[in-house]
Structures are given as structure tokens and as C-alpha cells.
Image (cartoon, rainbow, N blue to C red; front, top):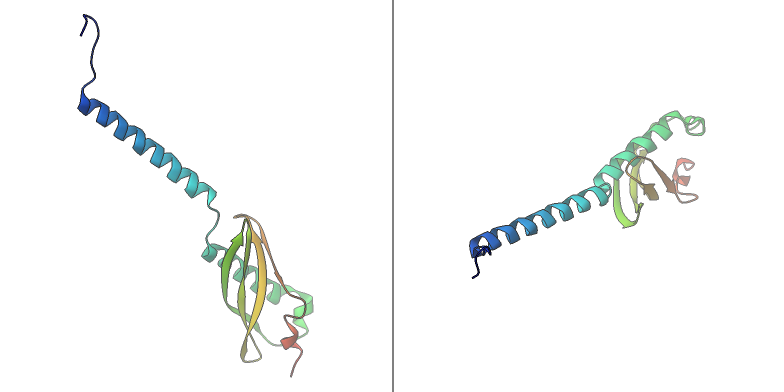
Length: 124
């Protein structure tokens, strides 16, 4: 070793490497946490509240003169902001499963049922 040159000890190198690995892991975890999107449960809660609000306030639904209650919503994340699932809706004393498609970005969303999905409201 020449005068003026210094060697870094092996424990110091190991400590620095460990610190770098931990920093990279924390950054990767943060990126994943903030980009993973809302959970299926969060989206289901949004849909349940929004759908119930629709049944409670839409003039088209008022003509049925009986309560329509959203019992539960079960969703599967399909891609991007899209979810698909089943809303269990109670009307006229019976539960009905309604297939729905949802788009939700964590702040705004919309749900859609297939045409004819609520025909059970018309049957006696």
C-alpha cells in the first residue's frame, strides 16, 4: 500500500452494500404500494354504495314501490381499472345475482349491469 491510499475494511463494504439493498427494497415497495390501485374490497364498497344510491334516488326505480337493497358485491380485478363480479340485490323478498362490470381508478368509478339484468323487478 502506498502512502496516502486507504483501504476500506470488509465490514464497511458489507454495511454499505446492505444499506444500498435496503434502500432499493424500500423504493420498490413504495412504488408497488402507490401504483397497485385500489383493493377489490374498496371497489366493492364503492359499487355497493353507488348502486344503493341509484336504487334509492332514481325516479325509474321509484315506480316499483318496494325496497331494493344491495346486500353485497363481490369483484375480481380483470385488468387495469376494470373489475367484474356479482352484486347480490334483494327485491320482493328474494336475493338476485346481477353480473356487473366496474371501472374504478381509486377516485372515480362507474358500474354497469348487462341489459336485462334487472328484469326480475318486473316479474310478479
